[in-house]
Length: 485
Picture 1 (cartoon, one colour):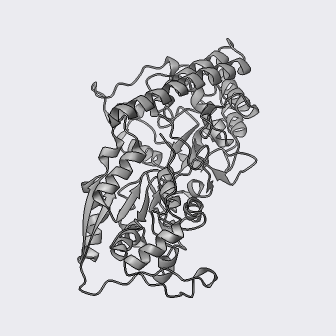
Picture 2 (picture 1 turned 60 degrees about the vertical axis):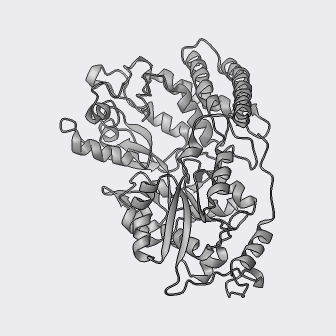
Picture 3 (picture 1 turned 90 degrees about the vertical axis):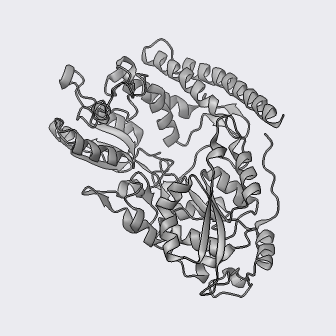
């Protein structure tokens, strides 16, 4: 697939759009450097407007935003264009997204990935929002600074969209287990080395129900598969490493950084401090399994693991277990930040945004479209929807203070960084990851079992990984050709 070409400069596109859609070029006091600021004419009291919004699903939109918006803006008719079709397996999401926009001409765009949003902003297809935010005195001061900074970085310092929510991860720990075994409690901004050293301080000689682990993966019941590569990858990611140079299309694992990541993961696995799922019985949901059965397989939930890495959604898992597992003592849990890179302890790629709302620069109804984007990102909606998607964190800071008596600050205190996503880079075929992960796990296990050295395993992972990547790209191109035919 060819890289996306840039169409027109964002400034020129905005200027043209302002001319065509009734925007004025009056100077605002808040304008940068005295330059003309784009403003949007207010809708008249009885003026009606009709807009289209691109969203995952019509019912979901109505539940989250549509009903609330219609009640407040009855003069603005909102039609929802479902984007489910762009996610069909084998399809190029970027091309399908562009095709859907060309066909439906939505006024408000939802971008499901940062890469897609960033590319559209660079191509001048989105309305710059800085000026209209100043014009309307829309409150962005009480939104997560790191989220706004990240969005601005995708638009070369300008805001071309807003995000009502974000995801984050934390290191969850069992306070009672730490105190029982005299292990110091975890702290914010620890390194992976420090976290794994804590894990190794827990006893490994327990049998049966008495066996506990210093750490267990939340994904431990992933079909009974070992998790060594998962830890290696998480350690490498924290260190700012990527298994792929996406601009060159090359697998890059033979480096000092990856050597450190694999060494740390393998040594932790060998120590017995980390639960290894390879000998566990795979869970098969649907065969009479209840939610209670699944929760009981989680070693952190059942008090058998001192630590685990989990997303903001994992809090809901713990609360659900507290309510539904009557024969299991609730975990006395708390959180600190995920492990960080000692060279950059203020940031992490564990913080991410997955929903960006923007106004199409060619929309003939930019004011109405902006009203919807503004409303979706308002404090009013944050307050009304805070319990609708408990796994997502509101970008409105007033609504991410605490949960179940625990401070959520560790989920919000790190700045966002993105590893391995250069602008304009070719997308990675989905089939690459599943095949690569399986191969890499086998190599990590070979190191854990002392059948291979770290250097030998990394060499094999890089060589085989490159073959897997090349094959996946060929298959991707073949699929695209068939689709065009």
